[in-house]
Length: 69
Image 1 (cartoon, one colour):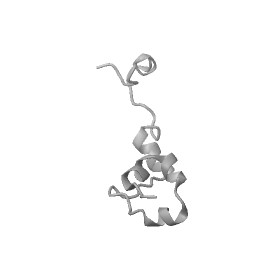
Image 2 (tube, one colour; image 1 turned 90 degrees about the vertical axis):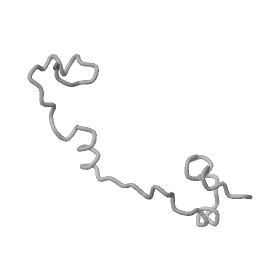
Image 3 (spheres, helix red, strand yellow; image 1 turned 120 degrees about the vertical axis):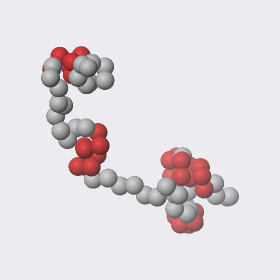
């Protein structure tokens, strides 16, 4: 079986079908491994801090959940 490296990086089901020897042959993805802690994910998503707004109704009804200009 010829190993399709790019497909193995992108397609989870294809990668799951590979055996241990084939997985060992896969080079590291060029973008590298990215691992974030739960705290880093919260900070990046904006969940870590409450919304700063002058009008609660703007935050509740705005499609983008930000304050009125």
